[in-house]
Structures are given as C-alpha cells and as structure tokens.
Amino acid sequence: MITICDTGPLLAYLNRNDPHHAWAVALMKQVRPPMLVSEPVLTEVAYFLREDGLAVDPLFQLLEREAVRLGFDLSTHWPRVRTLMSRYRQMDLADASVVVMSELHARSQVLTIDRKDFSVYRRNDRQVIDFVAPPKR
Image 1 (cartoon, rainbow, N blue to C red):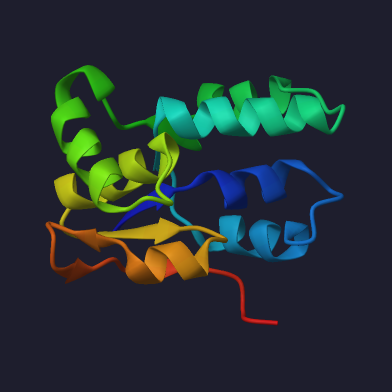
Image 2 (cartoon, rainbow, N blue to C red):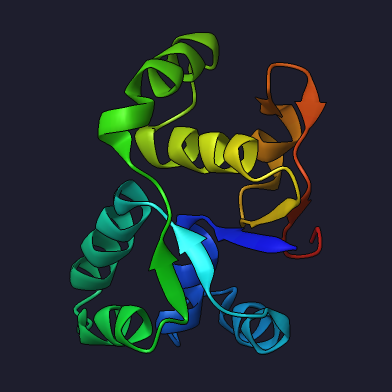
C-alpha cells in the first residue's frame, strides 16, 4: 500500500503545538516509508511552519532521510489538476495534486486532516478515496 500525505498530517507531525500532533506522530510510526507528497503540499507545509515561527529544516530532513518522497509532476499532470479544480470549488492545488496521485497509484491511501473535503473528492471521477483522518471530535 502506498501512502500519500496531504499537508495537514505532515504539518501536525512537525509542529508540536498543532492540535493533531499526537495523532500525526502515532500515525507516522505506523506508516511504511516513503510517503509520497507533492511540491504543492511541501509548499504549504513550509509556509505554515514559517507562519508559526518554526524551522523548515525538519521538513527537508524528512526528504533527506527518504521518509518523504516527491511523487508528483505538475508539468505532466496539470490538465487533470485543472479539471479537478474546476469540478470542486473548495479544492486547492495541494488537494488536487493529492487526488491525482491517488489516481496514479491504485493501491494507495491518503493521510489528511481534511475529512470533510476528502469525503467528497473522487478519484477517477467516481471512486471513493481511501483516506485516514483524525477521529471526529
């Protein structure tokens, strides 16, 4: 099973003050590396770490250790990203890249904190996306 990681779990893992930090740490101990991410996801994580006054180097260390690996090429898949973003008004570039990665890897699961949107998004237009999210509060 291939694991695709959205912004939220990665950010929660790297930010001890995140409300989902404990959940993300426990989850990351169970996931077999490498987790696939996209550059839009990395961009969001770096942005939010900086917004919270935290170092971004731990993010690059995950790449260096190959716990996380880039698994998406926007220059190849932008037409599909465009289609998805026109279909789902709430979808941002990072979410679209995650959905496309789930289409590219039939046996995959998505790690996200965004239960609401990933319950709506569909891969290959009709297939439910297998995702793992924190328990509902």
